[in-house]
Amino acid sequence: MSYDPRTATGIPTEPVGSLPRSTRLQDAYARFDAGEIDEAALTAEQDAAVKDSIERAEATGSPIVSDGEQRWSSFATYPIATTLAGTGLAPMLAPGGQYFAIFADGHGRQLPKLVRGPFRYNQYAADTLRRSIGFATKPMKQAVIAPSMLALLYPLSDPVDGYPREEFEAALVDECERDIRQAFAAGAVRVSVDFTEGRLATRADPRNPWTGAGLLPHFIELINRVMARFTPEERVNIGVHTCPGGDRDSVHSADVPYNNLLGTMFDIDAGYFLIQLKSEREKDPVYETIGRNLRDDASGVAQMAYLGVINPQNPRVEQPQEIADQLIRAANFIPKERIGATDDCGFSPFSIDEKPNHGSPDFARDVAFQKIANRVEGARAAAEKLDI
Ligand SMILES: [Zn+2]
Image (cartoon, rainbow, N blue to C red):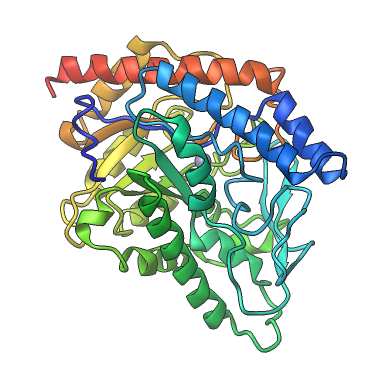
């Protein structure tokens, strides 16, 4: 199935991926971890949550929808664990690895650690997409995790016995390629790679040693090794998402200078980027950097910049006019035909998330769909004004 993102509206628009999990679904995950319900019962709850997510996303008028990642432990751990508590952890992993991030509110999210090779995914994004796509009448996108995130499974300083880092990372690149290919084969029209660790990689937080290890160039190289496996025609529909994190309505790297990342991020040979911007205080310098670095020819693809016009951490619903104004302003710096609209991040990348600024995940779901509807409307208004 081929897809032209420009046919639905003059300014193409798509979500990042996740939606808040209802209280009911979060309870089901907890009961599954406690052994109170079996996998079939959890799957039935996930089916109901996906059906509701897709129906409500389609009702917003969004030309492209996701399943809200309702079947995933998190955006980063879906290939390696069934739940965030660690049920179904892949056999080469053990609990207690590095912190992927320590957030502004003080909470952290810890990864498991690799204890032996070879590394393989337990589950691919396509495995859950296949169960979700039947609920959709509109095209679906699929998010996948970047190899750079899962590279953090390998201990920073202690080599894994008999499994050198290079061999592990070669396996990661193979698995990420397989994840993307299988998602397209299962019917996704767009696949975006979550790269939240990009901006964080320049933080140099003494509490979290990997962030001071100068890994950004290596992260970009890893993602480009995946991109090199795809043709330019395929890469038109392969994106990369950057953000300062989003969990429990908190962020991990909003105070890190954006240019630390944006100066080199467009070296990635992706066809499009989903770029957090709504929550950025000074937007013009970011538009300017994007306009300067977005590539006309990224190994055969003209890159598109999807700008974040919705802040999922804040319950205030952005209005269509302010969204349109933001996109129109950006067109002073970025060619208008290369602009898209998206959300700053997924609405709830982790399956356990009470959305404290919102008061409850159920209310946060209602807010999310209002925000998505306004993004669609705002993009339409901006396209009309810009004559795209
Ligand atoms: Zn994000």
